[in-house]
Length: 459
Ligand code: UDX
Image (cartoon, rainbow, N blue to C red; front, side, top):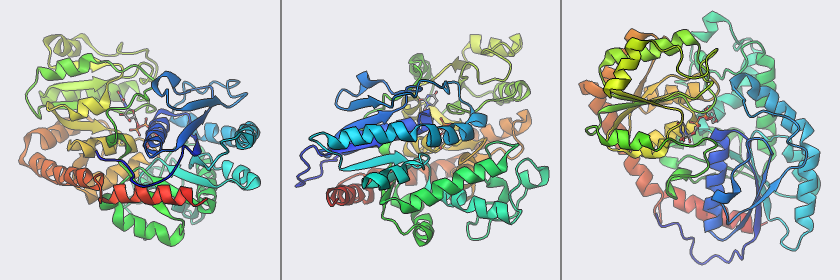
């Protein structure tokens, strides 16, 4: 795409970016860094020593590790530890972050502004203390952020109590955020809804105080949600996504992608394969893992399945799979990898359907390649993302009963085989067309990026 911001004198002014050390957050922040670098800013990435990005993939950036951040090991983080991680880094790591910023500000280059993940909420006070402008990058969709921001109030009204069965299944609409339902409310720690709500509250409050917000989405997808958001968050909003489409497939993966996924896909006809991946954090019980396997087997459709080692509770990798299932792999109808080059897989002509957990990156990557989805959200923003995919954009189906082989088989047929699948494909291709336009000169994301550059230069 044409992403030259013409006529701006930026002269390598320095931006400091602080990502959250989780794959789904690290990737968009590094993509954002690349985008801003391409407009002429110089980039310093301030990062923790656990889940640290690989500097050799980004020789044009300066990397600065936050001292003392190797003392904890959150590298095997899963969804149940996310809330503890957020409290931890937003208390223990604020002093070292401040020290790094003071040092950078005292250097000749100075710092034009700090851009942090929204979940680094504690850094707003640090930035205020240093009189340093802070811009927030929220890595989720706008619609899910709206729901997140509303969750603490819902807790107060007794509407959101984690782990109670009737509420987990409640079809009641969330007032003002229809078609989101009570069952779409963010879920993190089943035993501790107050902790989740506290994190969300702190994030929302600190975000409100930030100079601006940067979103990895585009106006045509979330215009209505942006209007609602602007009422409560009157900060400037820059919608400059989808980030990953600015440059060829990113190199921010913390795991090594198995490139044989692509040669396996080469052997299949267009739109015939179901790609299955539940992102970097989701863990699945063995019984559900087996339902997934039999749902795939019974569908009779070819599948490429990402099974992260350690993502099946109580197993190292594929041990629970019975021999009858493994025969399907040997025969070539299925292929299992530990980690895939996902963006290339989705762009491959053979990929006809993405069975996803609906992390925002995965959802956006699927939209950008026009691949309809089967949704199995697990926690956090994945639930509202799935609701939008099935009920608002109508580009996929959600498995309403979790992982049951009959429902899985039927969903695969709906998306890959039935007439309905064509409708999903037409709708998602229509949105994909809008992505291509919004990134071109004069398009909404292109113009918003120009505005963002002007905004930063005004500091
Ligand atoms: C987490 C949360 O789960 C998600 O809800 C939130 O929106 C962001 O943080 P994660 O679970 O990892 O992220 O999901 P997602 O946002 O989809 O990000 C996963 C990334 O890993 C994607 O960019 C995807 O392309 C990449 N990926 C995934 C691979 O490169 N290979 C794989 O095999 C699987």
